[in-house]
Amino acid sequence: MINVILLGGGNLAYHLTNEFLNNAAINLVQVYNRSLASISYLKGKTAITNDIKQLKEADIYMLCVSDNAISELSIQLIFKNKLVVHTSGAMGLNTLKSTSNKGVFYPLQSFSKEKEVNFSNIPIGIEANRTKDEDLLMQLAKAISKQCYLINSEQRKHLHVAAVFVNNFVNHMYVLGNEICDAHQIPFEILTPLIQETALKLSSLSPFEAQTGPAKRNDSQTIETHLSLICENQQKIYKLLTQSIKNTYGKKL
Amino acid sequence: MINVILLGGGNLAYHLTNEFLNNAAINLVQVYNRSLASISYLKGKTAITNDIKQLKEADIYMLCVSDNAISELSIQLIFKNKLVVHTSGAMGLNTLKSTSNKGVFYPLQSFSKEKEVNFSNIPIGIEANRTKDEDLLMQLAKAISKQCYLINSEQRKHLHVAAVFVNNFVNHMYVLGNEICDAHQIPFEILTPLIQETALKLSSLSPFEAQTGPAKRNDSQTIETHLSLICENQQKIYKLLTQSIKNTYGKKL
View 1 (cartoon, rainbow over the protein chains, first blue to last red):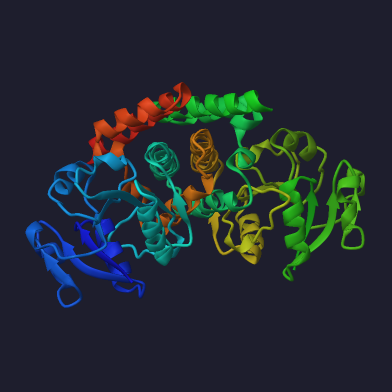
View 2: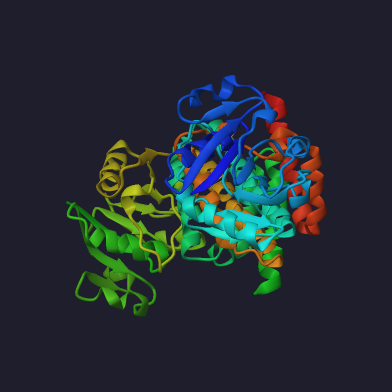
């Protein structure tokens, strides 16, 4: 049984709390948050506090707080032989200013409170200074997820940028597609199966192999027609991405 | 029972042929292709020909050929009281030069021969000059799909551009994410659950609501860090999309 204390009250804290409470391999000893109100729903399920001095004993102290709160909060965690970890994809191990042992426990998914989460399908990247701590974090990760990886701070920085491309920027492409549909009274739902197929295709093809469309075919007539149909912002993006696709395939074919 | 003759031998032709052969509401009378070899696997299942003069009688003649072959092939189809349709998202109704009645039957999905297709989840946009033909095409569409829409030529042009954004450009974001992972020995599969979640989220949230990330939060420190980590082409795209996301939320919030 791994004893964990969780610090934070945001979306990730909410989902991890639920997961830890329902996982037989994990004992959620306590949850800390600056505001007690937002974790009061945990009363009766685990101990809660808003006083850092009242933190109990545990194996792992897990910070689920915003990136710029990590240093400030961790500096107050003065333990010996305890493991303090943060859960951020963007921050290095040394963002932690605790005097104790340090680690990272990074669940790679985008969380919202409304949407239920199945952690078994969420990849977890872990890192620690000491092999012993790495083992403990790997044990914790494997208790909740099927996909666990050792990812060091340098790799995690790059992984975080890659995630911006495949998540934030992809979603922005959906926003632009939706704009076009709305402007012409086309129900956006007509595109949902194509969107899902594009994502699911990656289980059988690499993205490089899966590429289709006028840019890949170098079909300049279709490209010109498309450009004539869209607004200036959409044109800029269409042109740049078309050029990037052309370069990708021009280079490698 | 709707009698259909299909003309073409590409990916879409292949999948529609299979679907029509296995659908009790549809009688696939014949398949035409310039090269007999690529449709010879149909021998014994339906009539095949490479001679346009040998086309049999049917209700619908469906062209599943490349966009620039539609006019040339359709001009040879001289029927009275028959319906000739094409299956292209990019082409207007009047690309058809047949003397007979005209229509469009546009399955909105990206097809590859290797991957099996379940048409019941593929949206179909239909269009015809006459209400009677619209009804017939709607009947055919409903026999194979749960999502059938009347989409006119003007709408279809815009829908096709929207599809480039949500399919081709999205896949290119996957390619860029993959490049970043490869450059830093990170297995790309670590991003697959995030990618699929980003797509599946659209069943409960609009893309406008689903947007997250540093651009949406206007988190300039993270944006600067990210830009310092990536190559020139990735930087250009990162900057333009970040600006476009900022504009989208600056405008509407």
